[in-house]
Length: 458
Image (cartoon, rainbow, N blue to C red):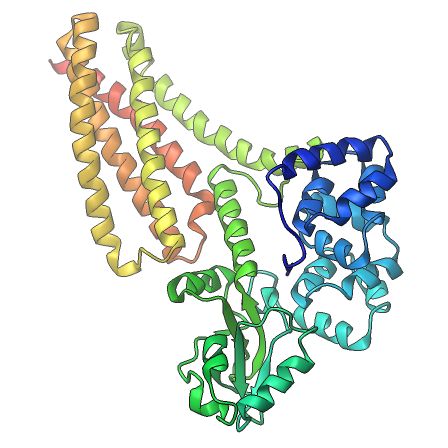
């Protein structure tokens, strides 16, 4: 966590950063040293991200004071972090770790190889090594994986004036205090004391008399996405993390939740696009190709199925050549409608707005929307087709096919993510591929199938 107390952003900060980038790349070290000293660590991280040459990144990083460098290291992109860490010695990295919050230190160690992590742990004090080792036991996407062990707790029976002295003695260890936790002799969490109540209490009051006994806490194994939802639901700044027996382990702060929200949103967007969330924009071409190829291969299979449907109606297309143009309209409209439905459903699931008990209600709503949109678009497209080609049959077929495919799109776009969620699979993983495949196949099948029936029987 980075404090902003000693930094004052200015309106021309972007211009200053651009100038520092140029000066860094020109090798003007002393000017850069003076410039970065006045930057907030977040701006320094941005500077390091923008600099392209690894040698220049490392040179700028070497100009920073240890505390500033550590804060910036916790804020840079994964690509920049890996570039810097690779060039740092174990003892320098150990010095930097001492300035990091425990959760940021654990994230850094998790990105290292086992051999490197052990070597760096040997360079840090034993208490910090124990803290980091404890955090590394939890999966990175759980409450335990994103919590920090720096928190302020006071025992039951403590007077307010005594608690104030305890806080003063640890202010350097826990710089951002907004809630004081109250624990019993076995460190079970029994209450919380918001800073406002703490300040307004009388010095001789006992903490139990002013604390909130209705404590909102999470277990260390809770998924980080659920943690973020709890912050949103209860409007929290800090959330205690406990073990299975209710003993206090650490806390999660709102800045960590912002990172989680960004990570989860990125993950869902990548999955909807058929990309791996591990891919970064500055990855090598080979790495990106390796991650993207499996999804493209799967898409090739689904588009081949669409091609087989078209080939099945080859005779109809030869008889009515314009059908080749109109059938793409049906497929494209179905695909767009399916993605709209899918996006709304996946977002609702991610935010906890679509419980399993509401499945029928959601499905009925989406089908109703599809019928209305299908009727409106079908009539409009059918009229255009008739006016364009002067063929009423073509207009009717296009209108009916659009209505059918939009209903199918709504059904598939709703039922696929809901079904995946019910069986315990992330709805964002494969929904888009299945929905697009279904709407393409159904779009071609509905238009060409209805047209074939009209040509044969009407």
